Length: 97
Image 1 (tube, one colour):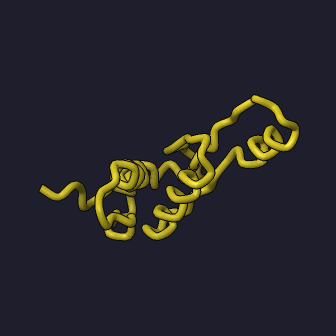
Image 2: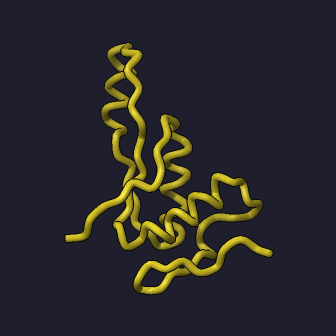
């Protein structure tokens, strides 16, 4: 069984699902955790705020972190699909010089 690692946290649904979509495009399976608690807090009118956590398999975490960093830095045209990794999850590709 693979262990899981949180690679991003936000209170913004759109941001969490944008991150997940970019990871999916790069072939990394990701899950958004905490959605139910945030929706429940909204429904009952609570000021309780919970973070949405984007979680990936630990072996995908280095490549996923690179993708999330580039996505959130607003690199023009970056969608995650261009970042390749080997079977150990080592990221290749990086910022253009």
